[in-house]
Image 1: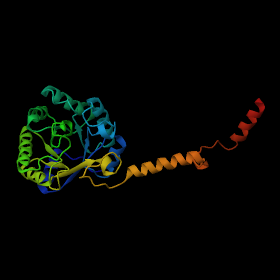
Image 2: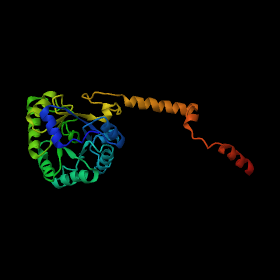
Image 3: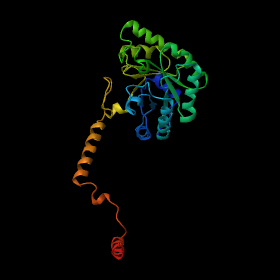
Image 4: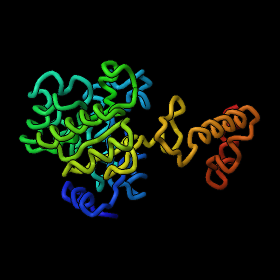
Length: 284
């Protein structure tokens, strides 16, 4: 089992040009398998709102839900760097809420870091969380919690002026104490610009190949979530289709009587079946 990465390891990887991997995961079993596969970072993401709970977006997700899933992921991946995603209105309201809720991830779920969305306006929250002794990842570009303000789930930073605004946000949040910056839904050129200008590592969610790390949802990676697959996702498996096929065969075999077969049944100890019949006869 590889040793858990630290913030210093990720900095060294950026300096040496070694890329790293991150997946959004929400449960014990998936975390266990991902750790066995050598994944370097897990985000317990508020995208669980869509994938796990069937919400229309991430906004309804609560701190209680996040903590519950973060605890499960931590148990599944004790040797992986795990980040807890601060949900909507757990940090925007005031600095005190931001620090308190970040601390809950550390105290109650054993997280290694937290993540929050927003540009330079979130610098005070990031500074306060960092000053409290915690690692905080900034999330800029396409920010799902505030997608309505952006006009929907649209690519950000796709003009020269917009790219400079993304860079300005990234630099402000680095200065505030962010240990890493996640860029979502921006052109590869913008991802390259920010990565080259920052001292801290960047991680791409649809931000091109030049970032220091790459991240997607595990459910997208393996084709488990059938509702929507972003353009930037490469599917490495079609688990959803296999699940549908398996359940269909299960239903058909129940109807036909093919399942359960003899090999799927427990048997009484030798001679006990005959004894049972005798006991029943004696009662009749």
